[in-house]
Length: 305
Image (tube, rainbow, N blue to C red):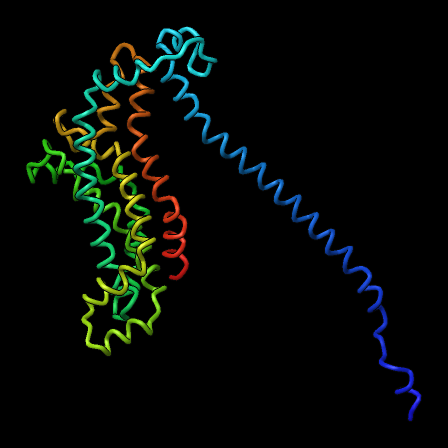
């Protein structure tokens, strides 16, 4: 038997040193990860405080008499608290009618926009046809079109169609501005649907409309829910287009109604803050109800191109 075999397996030079150093390097890596996570937590906390500061000031202002706000400023510590600003803002601003207008336009616009966007996104993700990339480029261009440059053409169209006195003049512009983002997100969501399921349904004789309605739509439900929430919030908070197209106070939406609380010669800032809180509460509740769909749905729709 040779001496090499009796000596046993050879050990590479430096391997023992690397093995001894491995636990120490893992410890340093964990410490570095903990430091990074701590720094990230601090940055997130600072960002949350920056974004929440206006909300905190608005809540504090709404909960104190307007005389205190005028005397001490909105950011000062309140010396007395009251809830009277909320019913006063509701009655002074006549917010009930504006609430109804915003609810009506959203109840019709949101499901219509999501369904039409999914119908447009389905062929863009499932089929391969000439001009498909051109359509995608047009959608990307549509995302970058500022609303401001479309206000004058929209105003002229509303006058030609004799809709400027109705809240429904907002229906088509809201749909049009929401389509590019909705279609791109739904296209990504449909792209994630396994092709084997679609091919099996086609072999079984299912039509494309049935595949879209019975197979694809249930599988992209998180994306549908997230888009519905985002579209509802966008329509609920929209101000510029509504201010331009609506010329009757009875047809104004809630943001315009809140703007009516701003006086020409003086403003009750406590009532204005209370009215703003009344306006944002429904959307905050909607976000909390659908929060588990938002990140999952948009991320699922944006992963694949």
